Image (cartoon, rainbow, N blue to C red):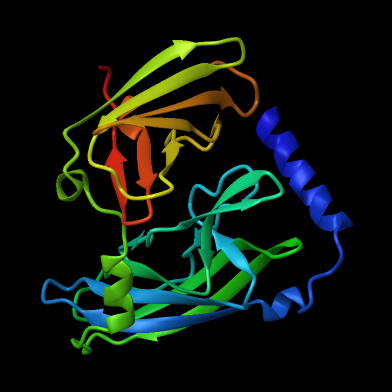
Length: 268
């Protein structure tokens, strides 16, 4: 399977490359931002990542050369549900491969619905992620933080990260987004046609299947006026048959000015 081969190739490149100037354990620092409590009882917190110069980590759909982060919230107390926010990522090109992620200082907003509103939250997490420079290294981060119920003053760092998330369809002026699916020799070819204004120079697109067992290639895109067309291939990671849920499809268009999140992709 192409995805597994590419991931293995990236790992081998990392093992063969010279060691980075600084140890990988010094490349990433993680801080919990306690945040504040909304009037409806929702708690808004943040996970701040500080990456050493030249290092990067990855977005939820990192590309063939990346490692998607995973989160385990077991051990938390007074947590009914957790929703992670994703600020707009950057598109990186290295060794002829594309990856999508972050560098420098990034904050992941964490939106928590307490099981018992009005009571403190104990947030416990184990995060598996990758950090890369000359080498790609898997990292596991654990933390436990007490989030008080009484704080009401917003943290500007978390507020900025919320504002940096991709625009919605309505905010970006998306007029329509449809997807054509056609079988090919190894899976399914997907062609997304999106009527929307340009997001700025260097536009790129990411298509997510909403199923971890479905690999999606880096889309090829072209634009004519207000119409952007993105074409990619979809394959089952185990080589089995594909069942595509159109409502689970998710397209993110990333440009030099802003990004747009487009959930769902009906037939044209």
